[in-house]
Length: 343
Ligand SMILES: [Zn+2]
Image (cartoon, rainbow, N blue to C red; front, side, top):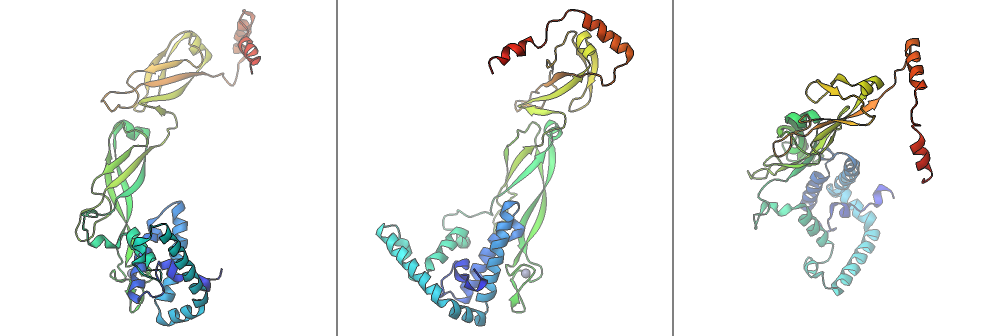
């Protein structure tokens, strides 16, 4: 589909009878909605596409001469669309839920109303006190296990609309669309706030930070900020509830004879005793070396012994292994041989 056949009125959510003022209002409202600066991730490219389409529609419909040409060129297709629209409306009347729409009259005025409602143009007149404050904002913050241990103050960067400095917020400059803000009169500005995250916070917690959302209009108070707290997995430790887990590599003789070794914790290394005769995969529990709990306690640190073999074996060690091999041992594979029958 070429750009000339796009339905610019539909993009702006307006009827063909829309006044220049309607067009300007609809454009500014939608441009604020779609402004790519205000989106991130997957939504951003979708918003960029919509925003581009919206600008194209506005460039044409805001210029009386271009609009006239466009109306003439597209009238045949557009009228057939209006007819379809009327038909479908008549159909919905049959089902009895179009009562409100019929009052808006013919010509797609219903679309404009629909957008008004959706994007809340009537926020300026709050009959119910519903929109007294600015919008809420959601964002994600990543914290490390160390942050969970101690608690942390995070700097969070938020984008919010601010009046465009180039056009002073009017959206136009010497009678043309301001290109700094694409005619929206607003630009996205980043604001950094500091948020205190308490020790012991759980992964996936949604924290409400009151009054840190978008500013409300006309001096109304700001909305709230909702912060999704995501805990980054550690390189050594992983978290299970309030406990921390880690793998502890040990030599075979340390496991067999017992040893006192230095192990890491989230704060600083500590000395622990490996009991003699420790089995591979057995766990050592270090009380209170985990994460703070909600009730003011402290989780544990669990170390799983992983017996590792030395890479280089000296002649002397080889002799010692030979001595070991001469002793009688149960076959360590008998269990898996038996179990293999059940697979
Ligand atoms: Zn501007």
